[in-house]
Length: 108
Image (cartoon, rainbow, N blue to C red; front, top):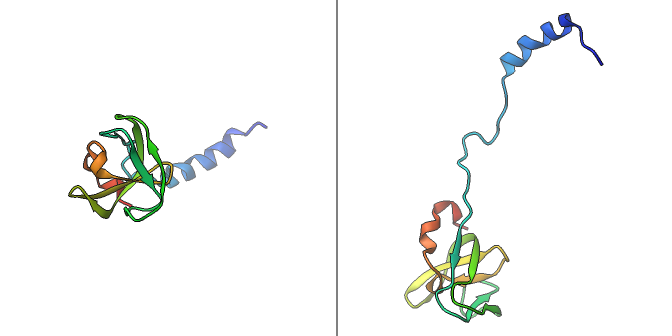
């Protein structure tokens, strides 16, 4: 479909006045944050408490855990931070590298 130059001429000022709309322009992009286990056999649970059911474990030291968010829970070896992994399960920060380096945008 072809538009006449008169029609485009009428619409052009309206688009300039309205301007582009970017609903996310004020938000900083959230980087992905992945940490690693500091030992083999690190367990992951249904909630951030040692009393919660164990769902499984990371077999090796250095296993990557992609963080969905960080919360607090039962203190383990002096650490109360727990990671909710992208799998939906929780891992104590006591057995992970640099959980606090992910930043405040990861708080649950």
